[in-house]
Length: 553
Image 1 (cartoon, one colour):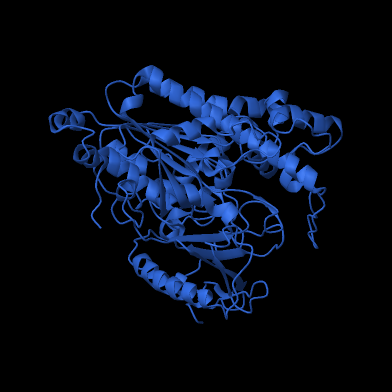
Image 2: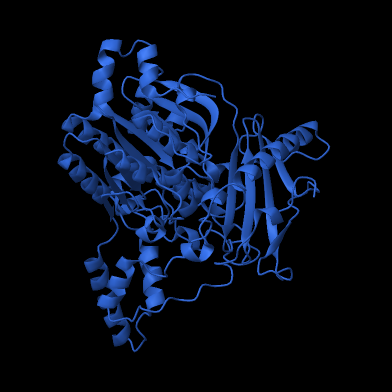
């Protein structure tokens, strides 16, 4: 289907006159892409959420207001349930199997261009500011950005903290931290760091410096990611969303707290319903905090006088689980609470402002959409599509694929391999186990793992009647057969596309163990960093999609 650019939509619908068209074409639109880490679709006001213990408090007033000027995508999906592959899809317009960054041992394939590179080539000033470790430049996210900076704890502050901690260990007669422990500490600190104010300071500084040239600005907010500790921001925020709580769960060390659930078999849940709801209230408070900073960013665009000439997209990379499928966190499953995401788009003078779009959309549609709306150009060779026709009200049938290729989960220390597919009605999920014995060619084959009690390697859900994906269909249900038939067609089309994707050799995409920034920190602390740590067995394991079982195998 031929897509219609936003500018054409505005002219055709009378929002811009033909006499205005030359001026509009000369004045390129700015673009702001906002990524909110770990924010579930069903925890924003635009999707009907009201905080359990504070129903009169608007959890996301600024995103809700943005939606009134733009469009809301009601059925948007990410590609996976963790940050690195999802953001690579966001920036490249490619699904995970197409861009190939399935584990944190790989960086962006240099053959795959990013949205920032495309905007830079179109004459845009570009800047990106991030606040989570998986957005590091070592993964290739800095490509195309004139400025790409972290909002996490500064090198100087981190070095000072490590020196102090090592001095305390020495005074206790204990060994100082080794470089692996220091690297892990830097990563773990992101779970309790407060970064939204720093991200806004960086972004607002960039906006202030912008001149007549159009700009592309990417901002990544991490403060809704666990640990869920709004009291570290301020006590009033924590109390606002659960004023009557008197328990002792404060959300700290959330994923690693044995009081929540067993950290080893049988992985039993221990946290009470009331304590769990308090942690969820903390999560809502952190979403509200991030929304506040999105509002401040919008205020800055208005203050600068560029708001009426700016496209803004707000999207999450993945969600989080709170025992909907017997666990917590993310990077573990592909169920709806982890992969169905919020997506809101606002552009100047949108003819369909305030509307809802029910078509399936994907996180890898974001880059093609923004490039199309701002420059009338396309991202070549990607499966992501511009959503401009959707904005115009067209009904478009598309499906979304998801993947996990990751280390062990809380419930299993073995490799976690799974894939998923959604269309407008059905979900099909598959889970795999690796067969280490079958590795004669240096690759590892995988075989289906039967799940639950369906006597099938597939978990199939009817999203129309079961949007939370808690009641899998049985194989004798005609809906089960219909879903697998549609899935088989989509899978074969997807495979045909993937067969044509060009990739650099895997060895050219392996990251160094440390980024330049991490290397500098360790060097300042007196640690030798020239040698690269050996990758473990799972990190560099390669799997051919052709080795995955086809439908009916």
